[in-house]
Amino acid sequence: LILSAAGFAAGVALAVLVARSWGGAAGGAPTRSGGGFDPLADAPDEIRRDPDFIAGERALEEGRYGDALDRFDAVAIRHPHRAEALWRIAEIFIRGRYLESAQTTAEIAVLRAPESGSSHFWLGRVWEAWGDLERAEKEYIRAAELDDRDPRPLYHLGGLADEKEQFSVSARYYRQALERDPACAPAAHYLAIQERGAGRFDEAVRLLEAALERDPEHQNLRFNLAQTLLRMGEVEASVREFRRALKAPTDQAEPYFYLGRGLELLGRPAEAIEAWRGALRRDPHLASAWYALAQLLERQGRAEEAAKARERFEEARELASRVSRIESHLETSPRDVEALVELGRLHLEKGKPYQAFESLNRAREIDPEHAAARALFERALGEIRAREGAGEEASASGSE
Image (tube, rainbow, N blue to C red; front, top):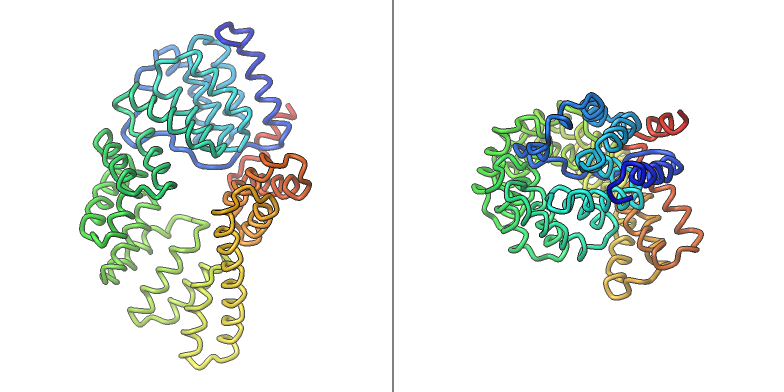
């Protein structure tokens, strides 16, 4: 399993079988690169020019995860002392929430390349996906020490600090990531949110505009810029940025909500209503959009439509309140399985499968035999994989 080709083939084959038996490959969105940083810069030509590796990269970029898995598996077996293909395999498994398979692969990568920052980075990603933040932090710190060019572990350390509400610590990590790679869009994105929250709007705009100069098509950066401009009162500029970002498809509801607020401020009520309806098509439980819609319809004298919108607002507000109450309860009773299961169910009702996955996974760890936790967990996995669009691809690859 450690270094021999035969042993590795057996280990990854087991991981592949486990993953494919679950039916798909998709999930979260780990950071593959920091922007300008190339994790393969030190890879030998035999890896970078390997036809299977090239084809695997193309398949991964196009979302054909089953094909990518097959290609990288072939590279890993053909080059039994290299770890680059394992990083990609681990990434695919993490996206699919195949965490046992991801852990097996990342641990083999560390055994093959213990002095590689990327090997430790991907093992950290596994632990973070499992919810073991202490182990994740340890691996990210090791990754950052081993490669002083790589911004990814610093960005993820910032995310872990945010989880602990240690915002000064997270800001320091985000800045360090940007020092390593000024094109690290995730670090710029979250640091700008912190600056905006502290009222330092000019600094937030500076960070976002600098990041967008390097990556003008980065949708979330532009959403962030548009919202910051709206908070500053630069309404026309905000609407312009939202419009530009929304030329590309998104399943996010909030940008449409904020676009509607900007249009309302500009005295364009018909466009505002259309924007809010766009938000509600993406998230039927977005209380703020129902409220704004009800208020505007009422001002227009459309009483019946306004009443229906108010009713939906009350329903959405009650659902959000139930989620908030359970989350508050879990702060003092984190091992309450029934509360974790109910929280997962409510997240699914709200169309939030990633949040549901986290809650239900915690419930399964505490009580592996809990029938409702297991059933809802499988439902959350299915919805995640459907969103990632990789389930059919991995299933087809498995059937071959």
